[in-house]
Image 1 (tube, rainbow, N blue to C red):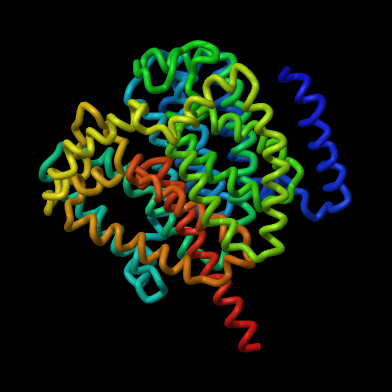
Image 2: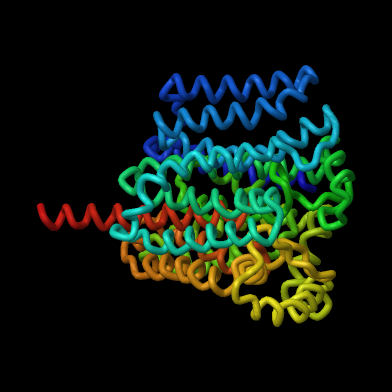
Amino acid sequence: MLKTYLKAVYLPICKIVNNRERIRPKFILPIQLQPALEWSLILGFGLLCALCILVGVSAPLRILFPSGALLIGTVLYSRQPVLYVGFTWWLWFLSPWVRRLIDYQSGWQNPSIVLLAPPLVTMVSSITLLRFLPNAHRHGGLPFTLCFASVFYGFLLGLVQNSLAGSIVALLNWLPPLVFGFHLFVNWHLYPAYRQNIQRTFLWGVLVMGAYGVWQYLTSPEWDRFWLINVDTPVFGDPEPLGIRVWSTMNSPQPFAAVMMAGLILLLSNRGSLKFIATGVGYLAFLLSLARSGWLSWMVGLLIYIPSLKSHLQIRLLITLMIMALLVVPLASMEPLASEIAPRLESLSQTREDNSYQARLEGYNQLLEEATTEFIGQGLGAEVESDSLGSRDSGVLTLLFSLGWIGTIPYITGIFLIFSKLFQSAEAGFDKFTSAARAIAFGIFAQIGLNVAMLGAVGMVLWGFLGIALAASRYNTQIKTLHSQS
């Protein structure tokens, strides 16, 4: 049945779209491997890692992968800042998958040093922080200053109240997303190049991670089963075909869903023909993640995105959504996919029968009163301890326990100031990417009561799109000013 649908509906639609795009070659999204030196470093690094895994000598990659990524990231930051942004995103996408391959061949290791690659390469942009933060408030950077002050307050508090190692590990979760967003904001003059790079990165990211996610669900690769057995958590499903809760190349379903949510909304503003293929596998993997907070983020983001556009752009977007629905809904309604997705969708409206929702509600009842009395906080590295809530199940509780009211108020104030600036900007109605970035950031922030939305890979989506949306606002304002002066 699935093959019949693909032959009858999915492939003909893709063929029609491809024929249309050949008539309009300016919308095709090419891959240009320029500049040659930097691309040679990236491709050489990737081929070396692939060769080590293929020949079964992957143990050295535990050191080679993060150190090589850091070296390349430093070169790209200094020589090709736009390429650096794409390289950083791909490390967040793929590093957990590389870790699983290495562990499968060379033995289980937890925590794994391989996972240091994304935060270390992201922290290369802290050079931007050191250069521009002292004067950032003069150019609209006050919100970032408030958030940085809160994070460093929590870190110093953690050094006093928690272990040194725990505080440093926590800092590597809190700080890189914020640094990355600030880096994008400060380099607003590169916004057009950043926009093109991020669109291309997430297009291919959705295609690759979505295809792998569907394959992961159907076949349950050996390295994923090995990882799931060692992690020993029932939340990610069973280590068998049709039993895995999809997390694709990432570390768990929630970060994967956050990245896919961002990519799928960005695809709505992409005119390349490849987006329809990416949409099919992307939405299937997104649904198979069973991450309801990610689904809610997508719905919130869509509700923010559509009304912000001009009427003619809304019509185009609705047509695109209809085509995507024709591709995805029949596939998601077929077995074995429907038996996994449908009950999870129904649980969104039947919260009384949802054990996960009830457990979260019980955890909030247990901890909220204690959290609201945390004036000083417990510092970075503090864990949310509850039998009903996991340590990553509530961004609100994490903020209050880690930063207290002293740190939480400036941090949340900084985020609200950014959103206030973005929603007052009129440019989003004309620039679809700006509107999409704003919607993505707000959608991620909306799940702060269900997920720790400001840390790790999820935090990268939040702060990365806050930063690029602010950069777009300032860039468009400057262009408008120059036009009025001329």
